[in-house]
Image (cartoon, rainbow, N blue to C red; front, side):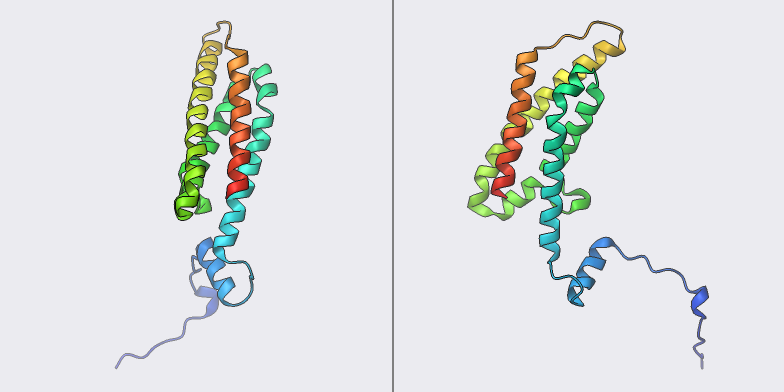
Length: 161
C-alpha cells in the first residue's frame, strides 16, 4: 500500500487565491459586513467620481497641449461605461441589472459614449498635428460643450446607480 507522507510547511507551494475569492471567503467568515456586490458598487462609483475629477482638469490639460492625458482619461471612462474589467462592474452591466429602471442610465450612457468619441477625435487630430509639428487648432466652444456634457452625464449616472 502507498503511505502518505507529510510535507513540511516550509516546502509547501503558495496557494494562489483571487481577490474575488478572498472577498467572498471574508464575507462568509463574517470578516466583512459589506457584500461583494456592495463593494463592487462602491468601486465603480469611486472610479466614476475619479473620472469626473479628471474631466474637470481637461480645459487646463488642453491649454497645456497634453492631449495624451485627455485621451487616456477618455479610454478609462469608455471602459467604465462598457467593460466590467477588474472592478467586476460597469455602467452598462449595472443598468441592465436595474431592468426597466436602467433604461434612463443606458440613454445617458449612449450620449456619453457619443461625446467621448467626438472629444477623442478632436484630441486625436490635435495630437497628430502636434506630432507633425503643425499648429494645433480645434473648435474651443465645441470642445468646452463636450467637456460640460461629459461631466453632466457622469453626474447623472452617479445619482441613478
